[in-house]
Image (cartoon, rainbow, N blue to C red):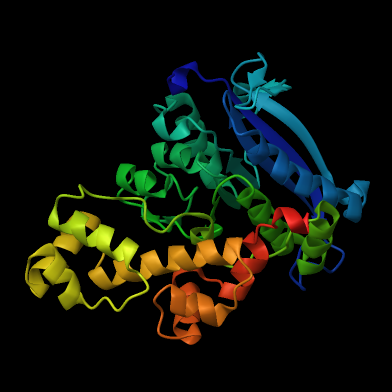
Length: 354
């Protein structure tokens, strides 16, 4: 499928609001036009999540200060989301050549492998850059990249696609751990439900944190999620041939993560010098031996936190950390969340508990 074959839709919302700054709150009501661009194969939750946040904010603000939404597409034909949902547009892109206050591009499972639609890129270059804020939800960042809107900017996307986004657009600074990122006028979110987090932040900017919190409570979501995307992803996904020096080290660390594993021991297993094993790790895996060992121990600790009620002290020692404090520091550094908070978020109840 090519971008030229995609039906591109924009949902735009007009919002009357009282600015979040103290100066602008002096009875000054402004209208905010929000455009959410969707397409054939869009992730429905990338669209529904932010729109539901806008709707809840409207209910709390009152109709006069709320959001009025319409659909805009390059074609009047219905757009089918990746889950099979059909969305019927109201207008086409050509019927809305104007400035919006906020422009957001929704993602979809195929966007990272889809060729750019030059019509959409031209529209974004002309109109998105005029917006007060513009950005993307999930893999919608690839669309911004094709339009050249990520160059020299910090952005994020779904953790599974962050490496590819960085490879495709080397002039961008891709932070794959952010739930959402803000770089000047550019706002981008991580995968799927992170669009809700980002929209709540935008509402907080416009209307104040109290309204953002109230909207989050209405939706039964967390107003400000703790930690980054790393807590949702495996830290290590790349494994090498088990017959290679690096492969032998990986297998040994996984099997003996609870034991002391100095670099000298890893070099012995690989049959190389300490200097050589360090160089091999950086060349083949992009990390140091110490970072690899720590990542293995963190993944093992995460598994135990999710599946057991074992005390944190026991988990720390069972996974090779010298102390609970060392494990806690690794969690904060790598996942931006404490072990206790991680357990609260991901603990899986046993059948006896359900």
